Length: 483
Image 1 (tube, rainbow, N blue to C red):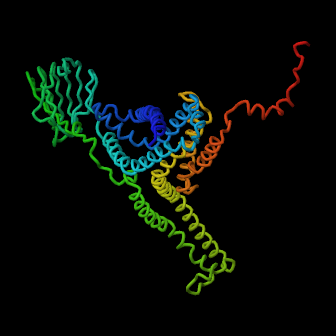
Image 2 (cartoon, rainbow, N blue to C red):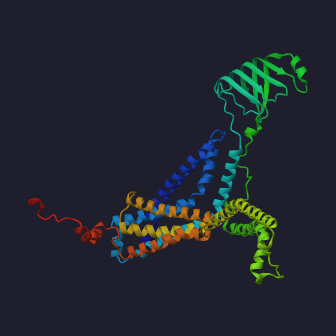
Image 3 (tube, one colour):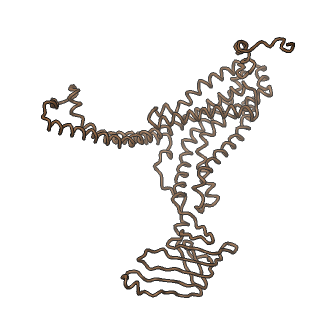
């Protein structure tokens, strides 16, 4: 490797690492905004939240890397042009293709690395994130004792504390405990002036020591109505009382326990191909079962129309005009009922067919994007390097604006064809590759313009082009100052 190649690669990786970090952080912040509402009140530690966001963030690398390459390429070649280094290279007999070659090889290696990353690493983290999200959502909220507010998160009890104080919030005043029971079970209510939390031997239990209070009970279980009316009020006064509450459901929520394993997003490219093959067979079975009632009810008439496909001689349907009036009405009513039944069946199965098509196309798009995003990296490099050498502007100004505009076009194309594919209006294989197919000719054209030193962004050139048209619609201003 020559010194020039090392210098070009070194110059490229400076903005590359900075931009990748910034974009990754921006995407993570977006994930935080969308997911934070489901993380609050679950008793998660900062480490668990950080780990969950990291699992989700890994999946955005496939989108961040192409944009990073685009922006870094524009900035690198823009800096070369702005500092006249590109002109010096050309004056020394080094062509633009030769200048682009070391970065083209580097970006090709990054695109190959992205393929293996998307194929082998992202599915594993997707599985972890999906299961973690499922376990977080399904878990009960953590215990959050608020003074003066009833909480029912302790199994079997409603609890209220008038005052909570102490270093760790372990001391209580004005304790009220009510056992949750039906109207036919024994009732129990405990009131105490003071209390405190203490460590229990078994961590699955919450130990609560109460002082100076009463236990009110109504023993009404398995008693008749008259016996309940005769039941006297019972209360027991205590100086101290120890209660243990089972909180195992609240503290044993294993948020990383894997319960979902059959999602296609957890699979590699080859595994998704097997899933697609199995999915196609299942879809054929599903569509056959949906079409069977229609075929069975219309088959005789269809075979009569197309006699070449009939194995046996088909009897001609009788003519309805030859029937008597009552029989004719009966036949028409039966035919009407059959048609209405078929219409109802078709309407009810329409959503099922639409969901089947959407799910199949989703799997295809996911599989193809493992490969297509790698090609996007190369296309974005060609666009970025060509634009940078043409505009000759570095820094975070104009290059950032151009890069964002190109990426928005790519992103909108991606979403548009994806939605069309989900609706069944476009082949999913074609939908995945359309953004690359649109941008690739543009990248080749830009590269050609850069190689021929085209003044693509020269404003004076466009003024000269439109000057004859402007002069036709503008009044002459010659000697205007003398008038």
